[in-house]
Length: 295
Image 1 (cartoon, rainbow, N blue to C red):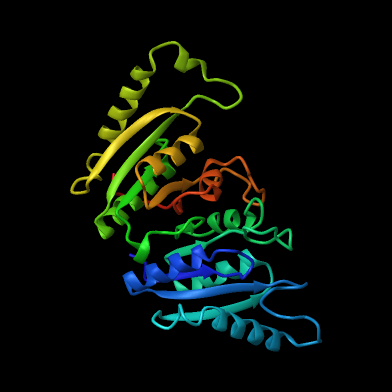
Image 2 (image 1 turned 60 degrees about the horizontal axis):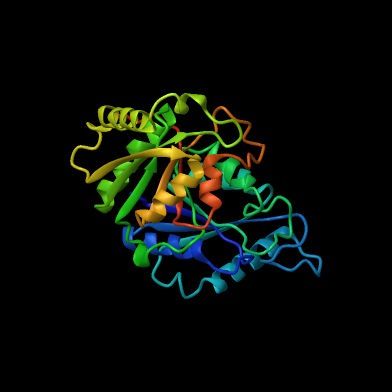
């Protein structure tokens, strides 16, 4: 698992948690890392536009700066550097599909971005657009991963949808590959603005027991041989997922990316996956739907 990782790089962050996660994963899995950056039309931090220069010189200059910036980290990591011009997510997708990338790692700004279209911008539109067009998962890293990318506990959030079933299959595969414990978690959504009246007509324990029984019957076969537990309670989904990950001291959260029924060109700030991924906590892996047959 993880043979070729694409890392979106930028110097415009205070802590390089995403690159560290990529390099540690590459070392632990003997994977190759592709460092990617797309130059804009205007000013960019990887190169200077003070003097007129042709496209090739700008690309070479940015590539040299990236190599220098990550010089120490790249000594023992198989890697290549790809600098392009154009729309970031479109150029990234070309490389992802051409190279057979099986994991994308992205971070976000901790300083105000200089461009509205920055992939680590306020609502991470590039992450949304990439997720909508690729089969491989996208890992969003805010806080550091464990040293050496040692993944020992995984929280997988499900809502029993088909995309969640696909993400569950991926979580099982990852837990087996890393020898990790898997916590499958479902939140009974009580509603943020309009409360769900269904949950006020019986004891909440009735609904929790039904959800736990449903998880067991739906996922038991797929989880054979994997150390796991089922969890369920009520609340606001993204809040409870973050709390569960913190309480379980999870190394990573896995969620389905619901892009097929949404306009991926819109930022969708309220999306549960984006709210979890961009909140301080362990890295989140967003899994786009593809047919998986573990269930």
